[in-house]
Image (cartoon, rainbow, N blue to C red; front, side, top):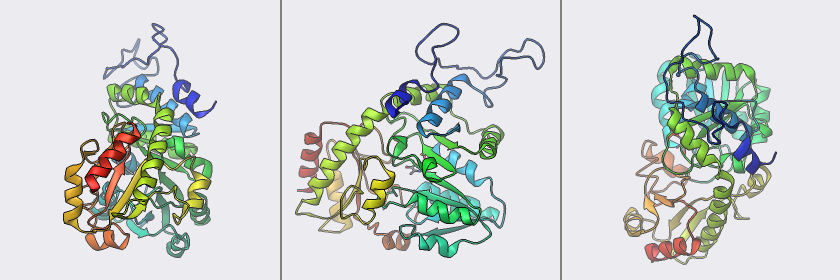
Length: 379
Ligand SMILES: *Cc1c(COP(=O)(O)O)cnc(C)c1O
């Protein structure tokens, strides 16, 4: 089955009780047993829920994965992966990382004696340089947020596996429509379902996929033991969102392409970050591992000051000023003060994330209206 067909049908059967075509919301905390231990496979809803089961099967199919588990948020999915580690273990991570992941790694898990090293993975030799026999996990985010750098998943996986380390990819920015990391040698895919997958800015949820049964057993063990599970109503909303994931992504990509080129030719814009440009430093890698280039774009104006950025941000009418991304409506964000405020300024600046960088999550509106909004905001 191809992607769009899987989005609609993989793991989804009419409800066995009634034939309902939409997966029911099993809003229940427990299940009645015939005799102690005699039940229909469902005992308690932290452990199993039929709405969640369907979503997990459907999402696994979209990532070409044998196994998948949903969590209450992207961060709780990430946390589940890091909880595999022991004091003294090392993690090599993308330097240009989602702010919340950076906070979780450095402010929560460092306390437990896990060491995190942040390297610029655009050059994979930087990964090789820090690998050692304590490295248990390599954490990749690609495209990165908000700089839209692209990391070569095959190349990093090859290095990591030589040291016996697992490779996890935060695939939130690409969505499974644009990129399937397990097909490129990754061991784990993580998603903030919150973003493109659910797609309608109405759900917080996370997901982990793998082909490795032992990893899946761990994810299931933590899902049940720590209990950061999504509720059935949220699972229903995510399933409903996924039915149009391929259509939405096509439009995000088309609109993104037009806006990236518009901004690049704008006389008041000095830099545009978007992996679809032929002169993007990692364009060839993007072409190799992604189906298209997505709707995330960052840019800097020639007047590269915080004051100018704030003025521009205050003028948007269609783009809403908000954290998050991947919803149907266009959003604009100011990473330095919003999503990436927890990353020290010197670290941010070193990666090009200046005080005036503006990030766009291009939605699925009519692109002419979006360009008109950018025109008046920048003017
Ligand atoms: C939003 C996001 C997360 C965290 O997901 P939540 O559902 O907000 O916990 C992780 N990684 C990336 C790249 C994200 O954009």
